[in-house]
Length: 558
Ligand code: ATP
Ligand code: MG
Image 1 (cartoon, helix red, strand yellow):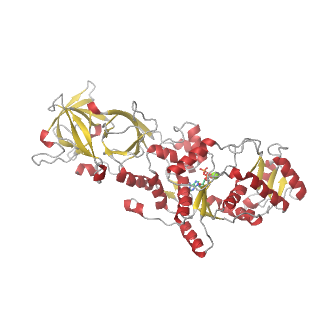
Image 2: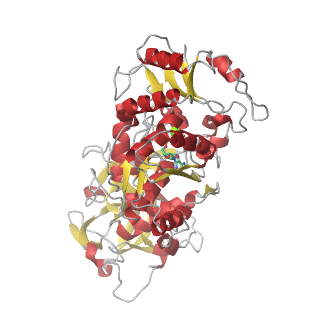
Image 3: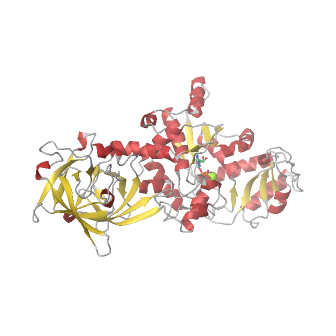
């Protein structure tokens, strides 16, 4: 997978094959899909897989996809989440056809529940939640019928109406589908389809005090919207019999079919909104869009491109088998995209001052740098040069081994786009630390080529001190130390304490825009960086999006 060419290939996708067969057999006349998030948190990389699949299949087969909010749990849902989800789907580059709420269908759903009662297929149960749990049985043991199971249809209809009219408190009654308490599938043991909750809903306000449950709502919403292929993750496989049971009994505008695929599980990351929420609420991260979180908003702030995420999703394919995807697959998809598109700049993260003693004190000049080494269309920029520059501390070594092709006393290197310099002297502080280097430059090597054909092995980046922009730089590492934090009992204990390192004294060349970048820069030899959403002209802040794969190898040869 590390082969960058792999990015271009489409991995297998059994759902595409299935839809293609349905279309060619005439079973499906129009491909209609939906992406159905619950607005109880921000979207993450796992949702991206489902978004790419649902929107992607609709696009490919000339149909459409709805963005539907599955909002049946008013306690946990909010308008903030609704807006964040819309923004993230748009940013990924997808256009929805409709953008309904499942709660828009509450009237219809109430009617469908009424129909089930009239058919004798649903009843009001007045047992306590605890009693219901106890009579439900276990995986090994069947459940047992409760005392209210054979209520008359009329009594059920009256009770259900009274539930809706607010005559009962939370938990006094529930409406259950009347299926089979001894079914081997626990989901079929008279599942609850409506419950009483005296609570405001973000969309319907105080209109309702009874709310339908997810399983009842989901299939019927699909049917109301004419969804042809209802694609969901594997944990819903055991719910499919219930999905079908409900739709088989009601007169709906269409008859969708559910198909399940494997969730995306990515190493070193969490893909559960509940757990991500805990990280946010307990302050382990700086909000839902913390650049270390693989939420869509965090990835945007980190500098991921939507193209790289969509590309990643097509690389991993769609199967029925659970598997963990290596983080490097995602990272390489991003590198591949940014390598092609990011403009190059120079920046120094850990500055070491260099004084070029034979360069005139009152002089400076403009040198030319290419914005993209492989693509001349990106053009050039001017880079100021002067007597005092900064280089990276790592690019100097006092007792350097032979193969150290950077700077050391008596050794010569090329400054990228500038001159050859030779280190003459190290000036130290009283405590022995290095204060600055004194170097000389070869005026005949302007642009990085010596007049006498003399070669140097190393090329290092630099920034002119007088012209530099001061910046704070955030360097990231994995947020978790363990491969699958989601499987840990205490995932908080596996947080990597060094996942964020801040460099306060970085210096950027002046051609760097410090706010509002849509696309990361490549800071040569350091990686890809994007201005943070909090970055200002007064306090530039850059986030390292990703390191370069082989940061030294390439440029040392150039
Ligand atoms: P979470 O556990 O994070 O809340 P969820 O499945 O409950 O996830 P929903 O808002 O219900 O979140 O998800 C919307 C859609 O996204 C569903 O169809 C769900 O199957 C899909 N989805 C969620 N997580 C993943 C994942 N890791 N991989 C693929 N699809 C996912
Ligand atoms: Mg869910």
